[in-house]
Image (cartoon, rainbow, N blue to C red; front, side, top):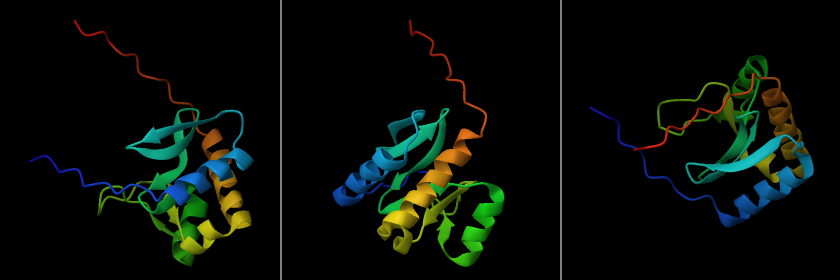
Length: 129
């Protein structure tokens, strides 16, 4: 039996605005902004680096850093679907999201790490007919 998709809550407008402002300051030229499931996200080389989900802001981190972040309480696993944490991603604690310097450091780290991953090659789309 297929799993039902949960109802997604929109991100607060002030968080969406903050996401854009932080990316304006720390994004690299190869950072692409586009929505994922209706939420603002940033991609590098076709790989998700950071984004919003409801009232949460998540980042992609290398395994050793993710382990440290989760064990320290600075972040929690990112679960778009309850009970199914996404590998390599953490939701930042609210204190970090409120602190400009900390937030910019985390987002910068996520963008830099994601840039080290192999680029995803876009799948070709077949024309219907």
